[in-house]
Amino acid sequence: MDAGPAQLATQQPSLPSSRRERVSWYFYDWANSAFATTVLAVFLTPYLTTITKAASDADGFVYPLGIRIAADSFAPYVVALSAMLQFISLPILGAIADYSQRKKQMLGLFAYLGALATMGLYFLEGTSYLLGGGLFVFANLSFGASIIMYYSFLPEIAGADQRDSVSSKGWALGYLGGGLLLVFNLVLLSQADALGLSLGYAVRISLASAGVWWAIFTLIPLAGLVSRRPAKRLPPGRSYLTVGFGQLRRTLGQARRYPQTLLFLLAYLLYNDGIQTVVAMTPQFGQEEMGMSISTLPALILMVQFVAFFGSIIFNYIAGTLGTKRAIVISLLVWALALAYAGTMLQTVTQFFVLGAVIAIVLGGSQALSRSVYSLMIPKGQEAEYFSLYEVSERGTSWLGFLFVGLVLQFTGSYRIGILVPVVFFALGLALLAGVSIRRAAVEAGNEAPAKG
Image (cartoon, rainbow, N blue to C red):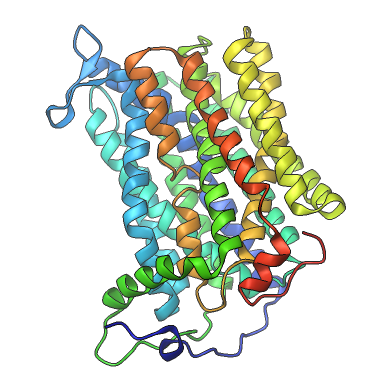
């Protein structure tokens, strides 16, 4: 029988955080956003779809492991598979991190595993769609594992009323970092002919560059973050793995003790499914529905990156004025209306760019504020464990949205219908979010409540 929380938890005094540590924490957003932007948001789905179509039969189907799949559906299914694997593994890794308190070392391990797999996408060419799918699943799984370690530092480096600001600065710096690498990739694609490079080769270099960027800039948080002493002691005769599984069972069983945290998490799982589905599927929608070339898509995402930087700052101000919950609600309403327009009225590439700018404004705000709000709702000493539950739906790790879009494409072939799927997730998320009290959630978890909810 597993020891109870009182037997396992030994609270340790926290080391104070410094500005240097907070800046180094921001830079992991800068580092990993290369993967989120260049791989997930721009090149992976359209390029993998092109490779998959090249491998398909006369009817447009491929047969991985003998399963008949439409070529257009393969990329969304791959993203969904990586998310389902994260759902199984990340909560365990988070619990292990809370006991070992080797979060910084685990962050580095998974960051470099993900970066190496991303560099391997350089070899994605011809009809090697299975290689591309396998490398992406491994890279995205590693990405998610590193993120839960990264997020779990937030309660240690920022107080209750600082977290909106600290989280927003991290997101903003991430958009800048991802955007700067995208500038390089955009220039490379535009000059591919002059450099004697094929379009496919330039795309492969761009994919690999995200892994190189990720690896280099991860050195900054690894140098600046402080390893604090464990909040829990490992019981005699137990391993981190067995304790991790036991802690996960307890976490899920004890969630009812924090009903507001659980309600927010369920709301977030739904509306963030919508966000991540849109982010990942926009390039495929632009290529297949709007007729945009893969060489022009980086310009769209680059614009989104830099507008999203200012959007993070704007929504931090809105949260400070109206309250964080109201700011998130506003952002989700804009998301839903924008997608409804895309599915029913969008006609031209110019309109597509304008719509992208509108979405960019709410993109950073909705995610940064959600992260900071959730950090207020986590019991002390269980940060990595609870953020692992959060991360299963964060930044491309959700799977329901991708699965349903894949099914829509499989059976209807319509990208217009597919882009409307996330609207359902936004509506359901908003309905649950309406019942969340941020202040009550913080008190239930034993934390300091923010001045404004």
